[in-house]
Length: 187
Ligand code: PRP
Image (cartoon, rainbow, N blue to C red; front, side):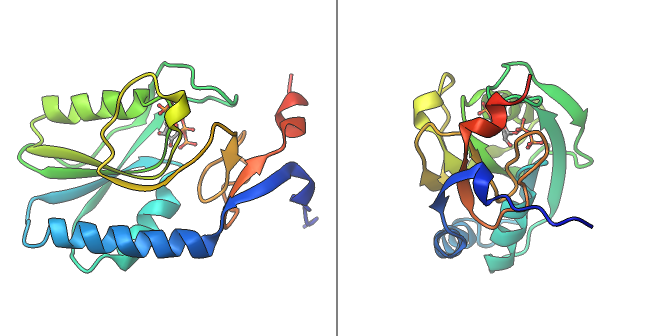
């Protein structure tokens, strides 16, 4: 297979994997403390971008909790949230009476998390909290209470650690700023 050099596609590395690991150590310890003894805890991860964050976080947690997945889409293939949510696949777990911790890669406008939090409460979740690897407060149109946040970041288009542009760059082992030359090429 032809190897691909992506260094030209990246403007700069915003957060290194070492920084991510260190921050996730802290958040995993806090979450393990806060939910210790809670048999109702359920981790819900929003596909696809949050997979890396879920794996890394749960490996660092000292408590056990079931996980479930929901597949949503807000971005399509562009660089801006469209504001409309598509449910690609639903949960398999009954959330009624559960203490749900949503694990996300990024909170951008906040639309997805606002929608998901409301939906989980309507389904009878006992509590709903949010963990996110990164947050872009400058983009927020829907206020979101993030209980466990990795990093606040500026309003750059970022990729890596599960986050993509047009399904590419999810496998980057850091959070990096995508060069505008990449997405301005797309018609
Ligand atoms: C990203 C991210 C969140 C959402 C946040 O998902 O994983 O779910 O966007 O954006 P918002 O705060 O503006 O609602 P995306 O739609 O890119 O899908 P993906 O995870 O499959 O890449």
